[in-house]
Image (cartoon, rainbow, N blue to C red; front, side, top):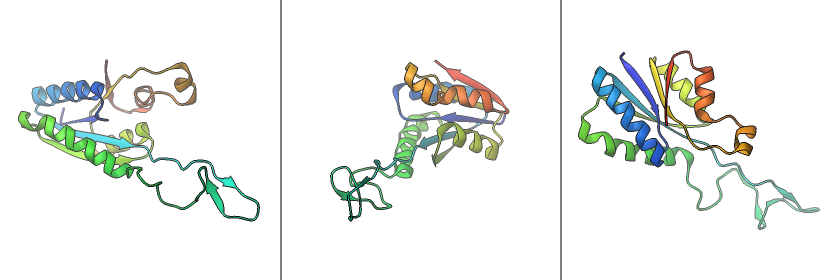
Length: 154
């Protein structure tokens, strides 16, 4: 096995996933690709005022930029990757770090294809019924659609 891809979101569970992927990379002398995916923040639904501009709740004009104080999704993913880099640094693993923006399962699978990863390592989180009805959990979507092996770490 030459390349292992791991999804990382800086949560406590993601730390366990990263550690497991690092153990495998060390044992197999494999290249580790650490991917952090941020989903873009959707602007609040616009509020129409008769004869006026489109406003978001609170009276702010609707623009194409993020609301003030909202982190840029790409920068958020890069900050997460810095945490992963710091955690892996003492291990001396051959790793690269990829920041992505978009639907997490889709982006993880795309990077796995780009890097020709033989294994994808993802975590299994706690998902409520409503959340599962709206969108399938990332680990399920990855496992269903991947054309390579998937390790789900609990």
